[in-house]
Image 1: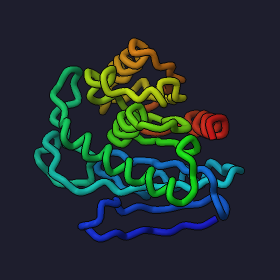
Image 2: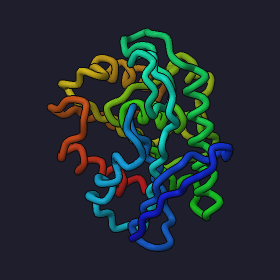
Image 3: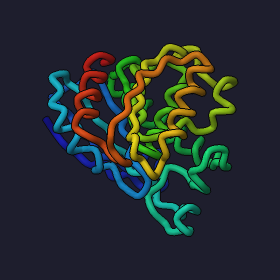
Length: 229
């Protein structure tokens, strides 16, 4: 297995990212997005803990640093600006779509490496999970699946018009903590209902935890990855 860090010039379209491979010559890829204020190294230990037998390349991109309105304009790594986390609050449409384009570039990179899109899985936690979910449901070619952890569906009102027929039946794993005070459970449940209304089937999981990841969830994540890849 190997671990590398790709440092791209600021002018390049590719995000800086960490690469971790479970074995040489992987034919499957997982692009895993961190939460607000973290970086690409955040979920690397969990990827290593999964001990997956398949040859998989994990890509952990670093979000750009930007001011975040919710946090008083303090600059941190973020996939888009956040104004509020209440139901029905305004959302950063431009920032969300910019991050979507950046993740699309990472998908294209894996395709150039010889990985078929149906062998690429998107994953993310919190704000990163929102981008993973947003991007996967709009991607024009079939993906393996999407894992949305402790998160919600952004820009849900535009999804029906923008959804990709290729990913209409994409496997969706959603997990949330019943004690989450950052993204409250009712917000995640509303997203689950919105997805069902449009016709998506969601593999929904709840755990007695806060805004975090627990051991049972990791076991379920492993099972989902082994099933979809």
